[in-house]
Image (cartoon, rainbow, N blue to C red; front, side, top):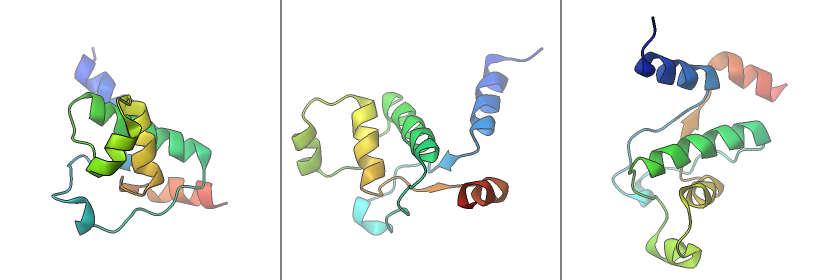
Amino acid sequence: MTTLMDQTSAQHDLSGVAIAAVDPPAVEQFEPAAPITNRFLYVNVTGLRAKQLRRGAKPRLSEEQLAQLGSARAERIAKEEVRHGLVPYYLPEFRAQWLSA
């Protein structure tokens, strides 16, 4: 019998993508993530980051960028963060080989 927690972690494991679960101390203190060229990877990374934002993570965009977005939903903020390279992510080795082929 599986619990809800087991099901949630299993869904995360099946995605094959992990993004940084902790907000960095300051946006300027880490290097931007590599640009995402695969649309499926983009959707996965953006979706996981939007989930973090909905659960209370602080946006990584600057105050000016947030002001330009206005009252944007978590998904829109996540898209902008990924577009600006503010969401670090990594791929397991076998997934990285599939995407580079």
